[in-house]
Amino acid sequence: MKNIAIIMGGYSSEYKISLISGNVVYQFLDKTKYNGYRIHIFKEKWVYVDDNETEFPIDKNDFSVTVNGTKIKFDCVFNAIHGTPGEDGLMQAYFELIDLPHTSCDYYQAALTFNKRDLLSVLKPYGIKSATSYYLNKGEHIDTAAIVSKLGLPCFVKPNKAGSSFGISKVKTEAELPIAIEIAYKEDNEIIIESFLDGTEVSVGVINYQGKTTVLPITEIVSENDFFDYEAKYLGQSQEITPARISDEMTQKVGDIAKRAYEILRMKGFSRSEFIIVDGEPFMLEMNTIPGLTTESLIPQQAEAAGISLTDLFTNAIELSL
Image 1 (cartoon, rainbow, N blue to C red):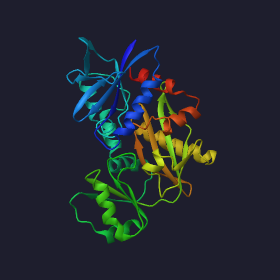
Image 2 (spheres, helix red, strand yellow):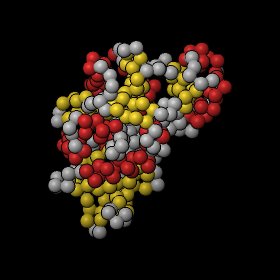
Image 3 (tube, rainbow, N blue to C red):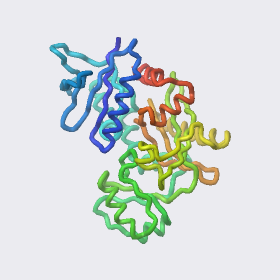
Image 4 (cartoon, rainbow, N blue to C red):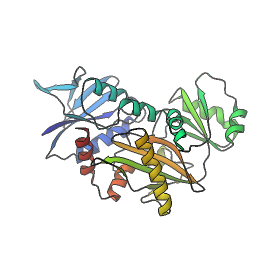
């Protein structure tokens, strides 16, 4: 039996969703092969939480835990932390330093994909399209007229490094820009402002399944709100249709782009890329490397549509990392 540390929580606004994802992994882990350990990673404490909710501190020297006098070491880490430090490369680099296998991509890929501006810049020379964008860093002068003249209205103001749509606003008038920028700065000191793409939004899961880069059935996102925001994602205010209502030709096209991005970046583990299709052209918004694994989340929905159970999905991730 292998000991699997399921890390969850994290230091960002996404910690609550991460705890749900981590518990789903714990619940569906193949108990005949693995002993699962729920590890909460917070700024103030790294602890193993047992079934009675008793906490045991993690030894950061080798990421082990001592329970009632017995030292437990892990064979593999299942990374379920959305946002920092699990999705931005910090945990990946630490595990690489202490030589502990983990289910996520390498630290450079994690840092790169977590930074929307850098990711899109790296993929652009490969012909992967993205929205017209304008960058701002905290403290810089905000020239609302220049933003509007470059991007038009409406436009989207987003924190550069944040997930679950925290801090994102859809801006319809120039006067709303400073307010939206303030909201985004609450999540991050860098901002990306993008032109509005009016089209079909799809989410494409790409994973390494049994050693082969695999595109999962694509999900179409129809938000009842202005865009696919936090409420739409987690409070049911959206329709998620898998497989997406797009032509076979478009399914192939957008799937190929997502797969190419995965291969160009030499990704490992899970990825979920978001696109908006405008006039037959997919535009990439972002790539998530620790996508949600709650039962409502897109990757589990897509895996189910592909006939892959959650237990198989999680076993596959662990076996590949080992």
